[in-house]
Amino acid sequence: MTWRPALWLVAAGVVIVDQVSKQWVLNNLEPYVLHPVLGKWLGIELVFNSGAAFSFGNSTTWLLTIVAIAVTVAIVYYARRAQTPAAVWVFGIGLGGAIGNLIDRLFRAPSFGQGHVVDFINYNNWFVGNVADIAIVAAAIVVVLMGLTGRQLLSNADGDSADSVNSQVSDAPGAGDDSSPKAHPSE
Image 1 (spheres, one colour):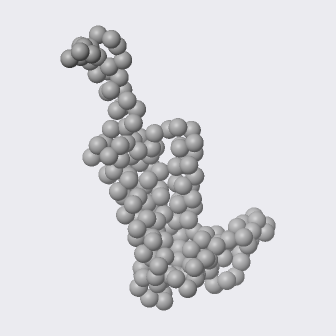
Image 2 (image 1 turned 180 degrees about the vertical axis):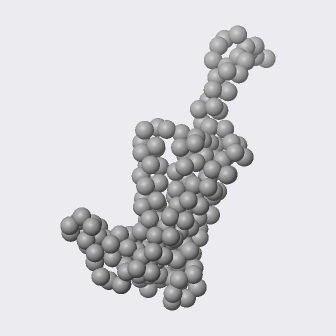
Image 3 (image 1 turned 30 degrees about the horizontal axis):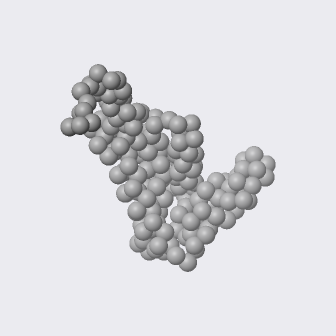
């Protein structure tokens, strides 16, 4: 399958940028000190998130790790049916984001599977995220937009797009015309 190398390269690129940026922040910033970048609207602040988005589920880090693993597996499963290069990119970006945060959950303090995600991009004190979060949200937005605009994202389970299946049916001999032999009602 030709989608695999591109998918993994895109995902690896996102993971590398995510993990390098997190390591830079860990090495250079003091936790919980805000450094404004664009006034109060955007800043850099090292925080450790044990929960999900907006710190929901802080006491269920292990459950979030299981969910992250399931999401990662689902992305890989569905990416096999990516229909266009754009869809491969979307799946690769989403996969890279999921893996980036999963690495934190698996290998960061306080323990395996219960690690806290390193967040550092502070959006007007509404929430603090990271590169992986940007990738996940961007991929989700593109998936929704593709769906709303009727663009094909996935092929069917056999590897054909819905459009190509419809085309094959309409191009079949006798499909859509009266030239095919028909059984007589008395037969």
